[in-house]
Image 1 (cartoon, rainbow, N blue to C red):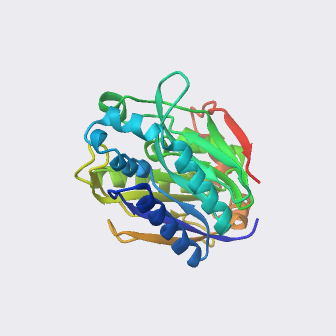
Image 2 (cartoon, one colour):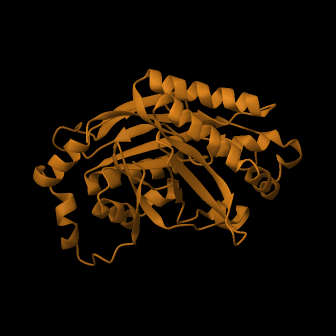
Length: 298
């Protein structure tokens, strides 16, 4: 696979008067990503919660917000699919709560390919807020997406803090792991950032973090947002010595661009200064990894 530019959003939660305002915002963000050369645009965890502002009666109620969003999911996804095709760019849409057939809500990210295919990844491990206050359930399975850009995995926020998930993706062939995040404190941001950087080191791959930023006092779910988008790699070989390919300004509203080169991943795994990927199994207590479902989006 050839090198490409990824754009990671530092994305604000806005309040909309109508659907057209959201459509204009998303279109503008995609246009700016493509103008910057991006072939993959990554949006954050729970960025889709801003659409709860379209239902004034539910804005202050977590459960009512989720139910109101459910009716909009087909429309949201149709817009992303159309923009992906129009601009020829892969888009990881901002995640949002989606109701499964059994009635449970999961935190779901969707990956749109320009050819019209869509990949879905649910968050697997819930934070305390999701478990104890919001009632979001664990989803799955863990998936690896084969795309025109390479093999891409997704670990949503807290999921990236658990190494066996990313390791399973790496063993399945992942070259890039996308980490959409939503954190309301500096502690949370740094936990996810350190997790993403550790996963890039262990898997000798790229990790791309995209956070929500700013305040949305009207929302009980995403009222405070702290973070910086970044593209991380392993600190070895032709990668930067600190592993930071590119990083944004904390809490700014912006796209952060970085080059992803799958060939560098394979070269490092084969002949790096260290061989973390190859030597994984030498750890005492190395365990059986989660199953990974392969999905072709080409």
